[in-house]
Image 1 (cartoon, rainbow, N blue to C red):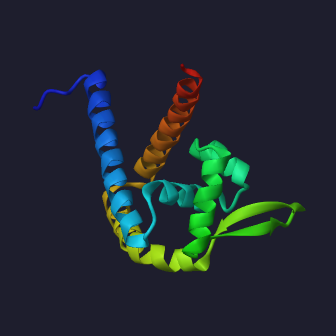
Image 2: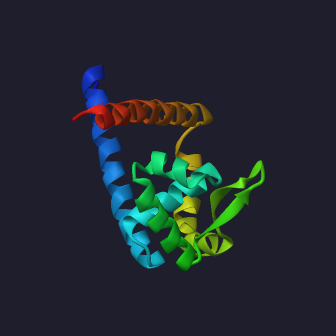
Length: 157
């Protein structure tokens, strides 16, 4: 019978795999940005806009960690390539929201569609529903921890 690893060793293995996954995501997104004709920061902002379903420039600045001036430049560039648009906020027409365009989704599907299909097939076949719930819980916990330490780093001088 194989010896069982201590829990602390398993946590270290998990964190190492998580960091490697993050490195892979960065490499994929860098190449995806090139294929889309944008820079990695602009793609990062597109991801924030898409994940939020649209948001104000100020919210984008907060979420991305960029200055309001830098966000204006990002939005201008994304509008020029047709991937984002400024639209009136339906809740308050004085406010402007930034949203992802259908043109972005059309281009993005060629890049991320096969990956999403592969994830769906692989994860469905490899893990039980309970394991998928546990993985989702792990990702939520790591996101919460990451957000907390991001705030800590912002306050650090």
